[in-house]
Length: 268
Image (cartoon, rainbow, N blue to C red; front, side, top):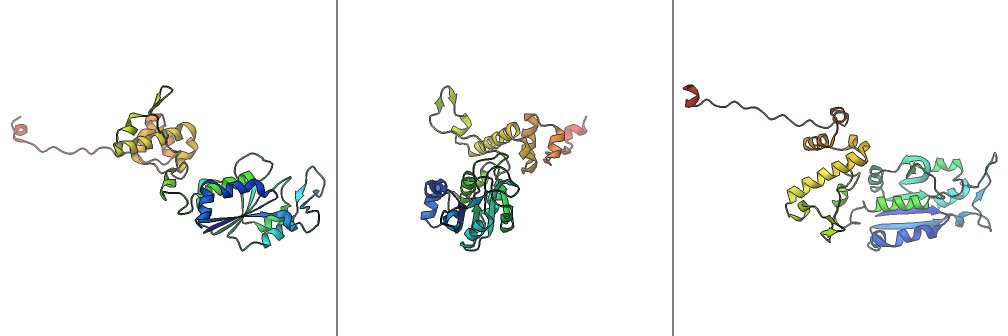
C-alpha cells in the first residue's frame, strides 16, 4: 500500500481529493492511504503561528524550519520527502511512475513566501508542476496525488491501460469517441465502427503520432518509434534530419530476389 502524507496549512483544500472519486475508492479498498497533516498543530505556541518575517527584510512571510521539522518528525519514516517548489525538478509521467513504486511519500505544501531554506536539508526531492507560481502547494500536491495514485496496481480497472496514456507511451494519446455517431455535423471515423481491431490499432497509432507531431514534437526524441512510425511521420512532413535526430529506424528496403530462369527465358 502506498501512503501519502501531505503537510499543509490548509487541510481542507486537499481533503476532497483524498475522499472522492477513484482515490476515495482506492482508500476504501486498502490500496492507498492519505494522511493530511495540519502544520499548525506543530506551531509550538498558543497562537498557532507557523511563519515569521524573513531575515534581511522583504515582503511576505516564511514558514519556519522548526515547525516543519516537528511536523515531519511526527510521521513514520518516508521513502521520499518531497518539497513542491517552482525551483524543483519538473514533475513528469516518468517521475510519477517512479514515485508509484514507493510505500510512503511525505509532501510539503508551502504558502506565503515558502519555507525557510533550511527545510531543504530535510527533503529528498524538489518537484515543480510547471513554470508558474501559485498561492500555495496544495493544488500541485493534488496533481501529484492524482498522477501517482492511478499508477498503483489495482487502483484503476485495467492494469495495462495507463501504458497507452499520453507520455507513458512516449506519445500523446490518440483521440477517443463515443455515442452519438454524429454530432454537430461531426462523425465518428468509420474505422472505429468497423470492428477490424488491427485497422483500429493502426489508426490509433497514426493519430497518436499525428497529435504528437502537431502539438508536442519535443516528445518524439524520447518515443520508441517503429519503421512504420517513420513512414507515418515522413508523410506528415518530418524531414530526414528530424527522423535521424529522433533516432527513428529507417524502414528496410524491400529485398530484390533473383528470378529463376524458365524454359521460355532460355529460348529468348
